[in-house]
Image (cartoon, rainbow, N blue to C red; front, side, top):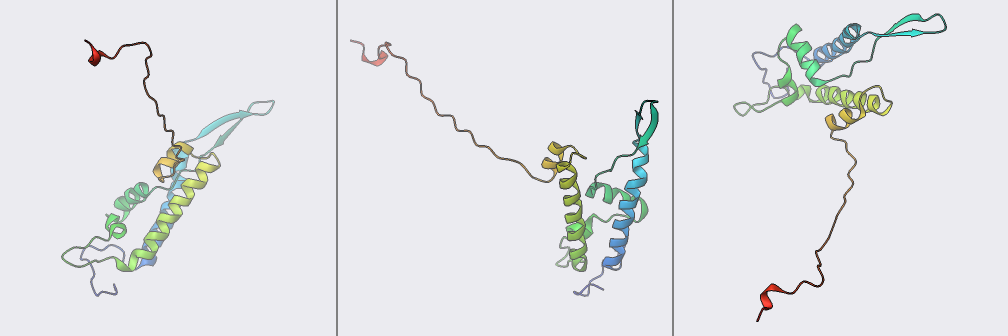
Length: 151
């Protein structure tokens, strides 16, 4: 039960361990989904056919979709918005933060080693290299008379 004594009537997971179990199931499901994206190569002197499957990135959207299909809507566990002066998911804060950190780390490492598109990974995780270029200029045209000084 939540420390504040509130349990949302549509709460799917009763404990943070239940949500953690769903998170682990989702990561295993990604391995199954990878079978939909085979990479076929022909290697060696005889051109042996080799099928490899990519590592799919962990995304919160994917987790929400997975849970929606299997358990129901879980986005509120992560948002934990106040409703009528109450928050119903305070006891899930730690596991939600852990899931988000694992997702972010997975994407960043995947981008760094070239498993995922580095540019997209940077944008999704608000990582960018900022280079400031200041260009200052003025217009100086010699030999043109000042129009306002006519006599």
